[in-house]
Image 1: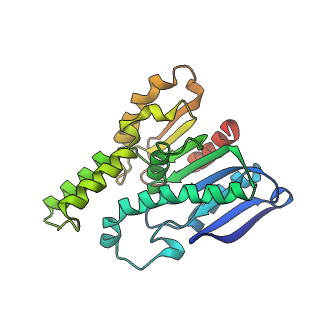
Image 2: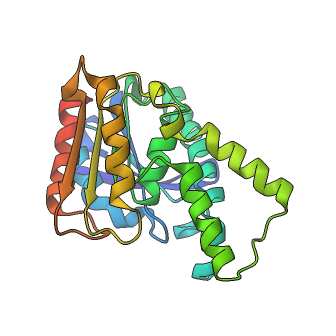
Length: 255
């Protein structure tokens, strides 16, 4: 039986899933990050199937989402996207440290996965944390600086005021560059990485993600089994059941 527990890690609300008979043991560990305007509960189907396989799975609410929501409108939340992404990357380390200190995880078998914004977080986290041993990006992309610049250009085109000074904007772009995997793909170090993306995605451009996949293929020439890209010809911005099952399979094989 899989047990679901509601906890707080510092100020971060999380759901933790594990099989009841092993929940007190040191287990391989997976953190699942939800998408923009979503919440931790929305990905329980992934966590359940992963927990059945013997993983301890934690789903956190990101800043301004789920239990941490402050009721911001869509446009106001859009302005905070990169704050949320950067904050979530920092909080991943807090979550991991708490579970490691409690001796509940196998620190050599830690995975990271996310949908949409969570996939973007996952790819950025790979530039910061060598402890991530395997990862899955579902509808995410690594081009932090390019994507942010596109957003800024769109705001200017629509005569929408950017709520940052030029100095704040320069600082933000500098921070994004430090977490932009497209600018430092060597940090992957051959770690297992799977992508899933729908070709008709209107939110996160498929072409960006596939372009990055093509550029990193040579880095996996010695271990091609550690890199996979699954394209869905018909899907928009929603992961198919195949994507769900392949995610579970990926961690089963690589973690």
